[in-house]
Image (cartoon, rainbow, N blue to C red; front, side, top):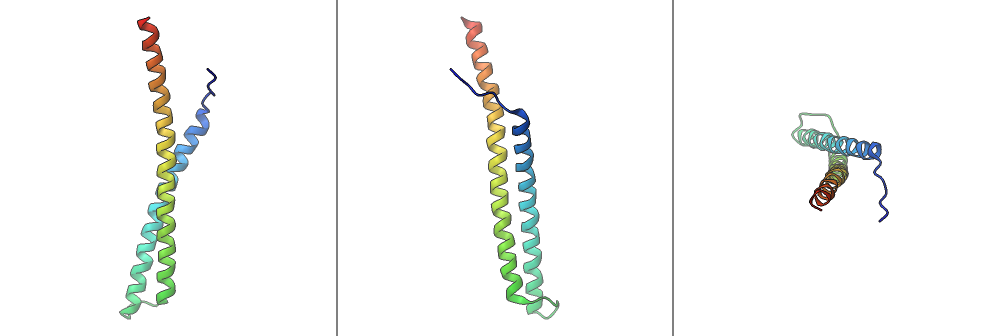
Length: 100
């Protein structure tokens, strides 16, 4: 059976990228909320921001934040499970060899 060796550096980098994307998604979501709150203050006459254009920007920021968070979580989970399953398989093979 031919099994490709794991590139541990790539897996670690992808897990880090996944975490960074999740953080970026969270930050973009917070930024979208702040932008929306500023647009709401414009309606009340308490801020000097343009209304509907800012709200549309907030929708774009929020959507992009959700997308980044989902992609980051997917990368993190995929490469974390890859490392765990490789460990699990090695342990299973070791136990099978020890029994026989």
